[in-house]
Image 1 (cartoon, rainbow, N blue to C red):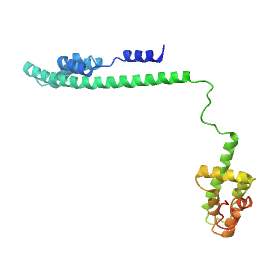
Image 2 (image 1 turned 60 degrees about the vertical axis):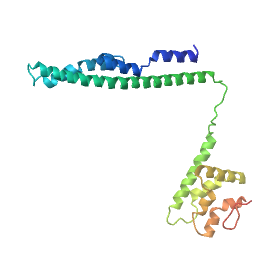
Image 3 (image 1 turned 180 degrees about the horizontal axis):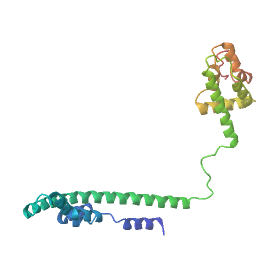
Image 4 (image 1 turned 90 degrees about the vertical axis):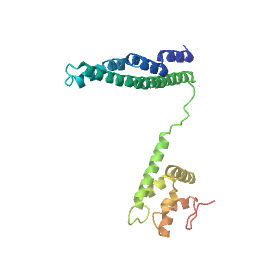
Length: 229
C-alpha cells in the first residue's frame, strides 16, 4: 500500500461533521439533532428541561400545573438555544480534531516513507568531535576559568601558575599557538592575548604574561604587543 492510498483511507475514516447540517438539525429537532455531533450531549439536553423544571418547581407550585408547564416551556426554550450553540461548537471542534489528527498521521506516514527511501550509505552531516578535540576544548575552558578568577582578585599580580602552565603546554610551537588563539576566540568570543594583558596594568608584567607569544614570534615585543603581520 503506497502513501497516497493510506492518506485516502485516513480521510474516509475521519468522518468530518457538517456545521451547516448540525445547525439545521439542532434548530428543528433540538436535543435529538444534537446527537449528530455529540451522543452524550444529546442525552444530557434531553433530560435537561425535565430536571431543571423539577428542581425549581417541585417545592413551589405543588399541584399548579399551569405554572409547572410554564416553567417547563421556559426551560425547553433555554434547552433549545443551548443545543443550537452546542451543535455549532461541537461540529467545529470535531472538524478541527479531524484536521489535526489527519495532519499528524500524514506527517508520520511521510516521515516513515522518507526514512525508508533514504539510502543507507549516506553519512551523517554533523561531524562528531573526537576525544582529542573534546579534551582540547576542556583545557581551554579551564584556562578561561583561571583567567576570569585571576581578574577578580584584588591584587592580581602576574599570571598564575595554572595559567602559565597551560599556555606553555598548549603552545609547543607557533602553529600550536595560532591554533590556541583561534580556538579560544571561537569558544569565548574574546582574544586570549587581550585577556592576558588585562590581568595587570604594569608594562613589565603584561610583557611577562604574553612572553610565550612574543617568543613564538606571533606578537611584537614592544607594548601594546600587536600581532605581527
